[in-house]
Image 1 (cartoon, one colour):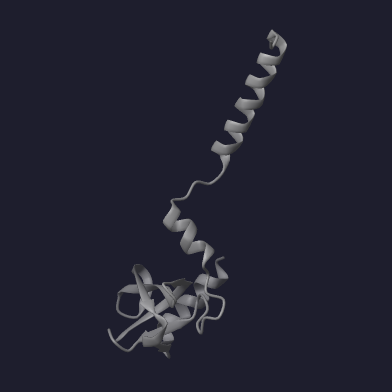
Image 2 (cartoon, rainbow, N blue to C red; image 1 turned 120 degrees about the horizontal axis):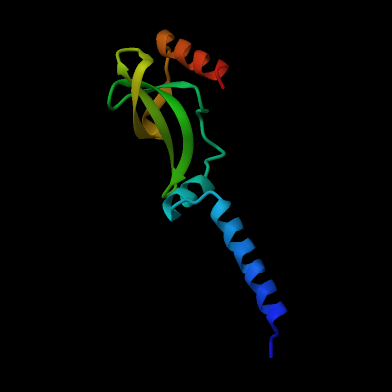
Length: 117
């Protein structure tokens, strides 16, 4: 039979483990899956400007990941033409419709953002 000292010690250990678990960052399963499947063999890297041939839009690559065997990119699209300074939209683009962009204004925003990191 457990004595009072053992019960108090068990309560302290349980409280400590719960506090430690609560201090950790919590993510949904879909986010954990996406973060765990970073596409290492992707053509484009974060902060590179890309052009989508299907939508005829330029954007800034923020993240690369793999979904169902396809390399995908989370891309920031400028809210105003050719500049991310006034806000952005986020879109997921497949790698096969992308090419490097020569958009000078968007590239300047990317460099400015990289310096601010």
